[in-house]
Image (cartoon, rainbow, N blue to C red; front, top):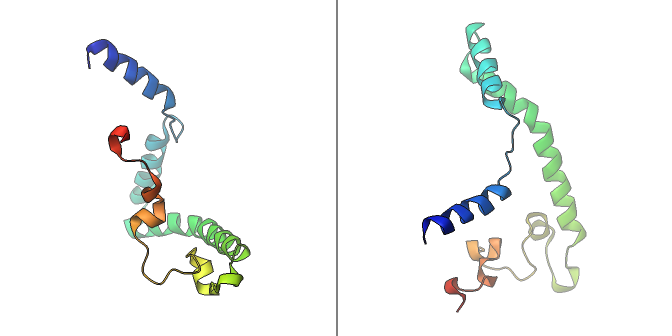
Length: 113
């Protein structure tokens, strides 16, 4: 790969990059942590308060995903409620592998062969 190809590749990949946070997010977050610490709050209390803010959202997402999985339960093939809740197939007797969970077994081999 020459310099021109590398520059083109960087430009193409750069177009796909999306920043997940607005500019200055890290500075604002660190500023809030420092202000809380300066006010005498322990680091544990600051982290716990942040966790408590996210806990209802995480619980709601878990409930929605569990109900979604139950809606697609395969009763005809004997899928149990517990297996449906976590998204396991009706005939899953062994622990699933990473290839099963992420669908890696369906990818073509590297190099296109």
